[in-house]
Length: 481
Image (cartoon, rainbow, N blue to C red; front, side, top):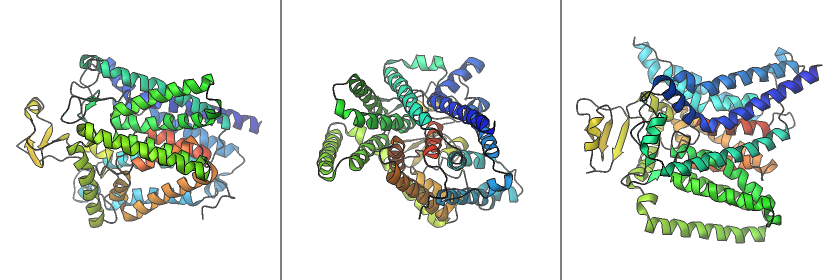
């Protein structure tokens, strides 16, 4: 009777996780549209509506706890359940996050000075930085079926096709259509108190960057790396049957994903996709064939990159954006050097977007007259604040590097622990599952994290850490030494 109950609980858990993973890519779109239906245009997404995924995850976590209890483990045995290096690293990050946020964070200093204490920075920082790791820690302790992983792969391919096709379709839709759906009447800008922008444009051009059902083109690009990894693994397996219908279908899907990734104009996503193919080639083919293929791949990428820079410098170089990708990591390194014990959760990264002013940075001498109709928007021309004139804006601190963000929040120790987490996870996957799409996408996203806050989107972070938990179980025989 107990085994039957456990089996039912496992099927229920895997089914709910599959539903969650399938719906997550549509989160920003659905929340925006439903908010528009309920409250009308011009409203920020309802917070309680945006937390549907966390509510579902809490319910799934309750199922996991029930499974652990029913699997003949008593309460005391759950506490001493075997831990490996990954577990201890995550426990260390959790302890650092809580401790540093209490002792060293600015909100704690304000509270001790007699000001009102706000839990919001800590809560947002924990949501982005620690909560996905906590899911990984807990979900490793229950069994996952191979059928679940296979079914997830097919659902991700299907979802990816829908998201990619809709994203390309949005290139041809007028701005009025997005406003009707509930998006903002401004593109390329984020206001915490307002609805999402429907798309972004490359600075200084009228070129639209697609974001499909996501909150931004970079978020779309990062998530597309997930079905991209599944696709290239499936294509590799079908190479022996080039004339099969499955292969032709996969090639068509490959072109669809490639086109969608291209129109995000996310250079970090492009790099992640290239790294995924690079790693796949290095882990699959024999040495002689491998070097030949890699030579073709690297030469092709260099040629495409060189042609792109020469023919489309406004797309590939992007002076303002590129300067930010160099300047902000340097600022983050200086902050880490000045505060080696960290500033606490929520002090850097995506949490800052919810806590700071909305800022837009333009090239020196650029036209800023369009912003006068939006007095709450902070506008900078070069390094000079031109709007508003009556106060100093508090812009979000975005290191443009996930690892440095962790370093700012959790200090040098937290940065080292996080790098250890990424390194050990990558090594274990390389040794045990080198042709797994989850290994490939983890490497691709971890590489892109050098240039973006890649783990900020829940569709990426929850999907990846849950799937990693399903293929990296805890066991006494495993030693990450």
